[in-house]
Length: 185
Image (cartoon, rainbow, N blue to C red):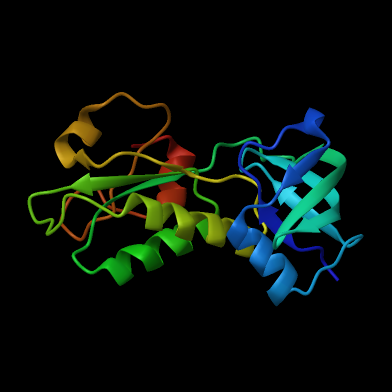
């Protein structure tokens, strides 16, 4: 059985212990029914995996004694990021963010376009969804959530590597893998 994984922002290898936040502690103790001595995994969201043992439970909060640390091996190629206008329907936006994190994107760039119905997003809620999707898909890298940008500003900035726009208009279209093989943008 796989050990449960928890997000531990700010965890340090040298600290020896980490106290789970209230929500993670509640999930650990009540949903998973973990007890003192049970092992768990923690991640800092930056590619580190920590193995630990629950060493204490006080006032409904778990303290984890760190046993070992491992750097998760990442592929040689960079993960893609996604830029997308914020849909008017919050549930669609939340679903998109969840699925994008689950497939392993490196960043989300919310865009304000001429047809956008919204120019802002509930950043705290989106970050919670991102953390949940990262944990659910057992990943150790939390994608970067970038600030909302105008489409023109996003397109005109310098970036490394190829960039692609999904569209249904006439013009330079084709499968992305073919364009990557030929080095096209």
